[in-house]
Amino acid sequence: MPDHVIQPNKEALIKRLNRIEGQVRGVAKMIVEDRYCVDILNQVSALQSALDAVAMQLLENHTHGCMQSAIQSGNGDAAIDELMAVVRKFAR
Image (cartoon, rainbow, N blue to C red; front, side):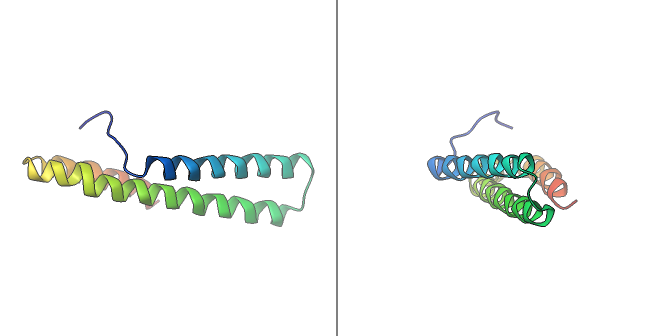
């Protein structure tokens, strides 16, 4: 499998990740400030959802790009095995 690809919507993904990075800093600040645990946990939950959304976008990009190319070139079985290994990580 290729070690790098050109991501469609790269700018949007980077923008989302930068927002997530800001949220992580916000959670750290909340901990430093001894904020209420439930408020911190709510922010952590929002972070998990934001990261899941980025992962789903990357998974969609991979499926429409790398997977589609692999299937068309006759390497579909290996690509499907790789995809399933990744999906299993998210299904835990």
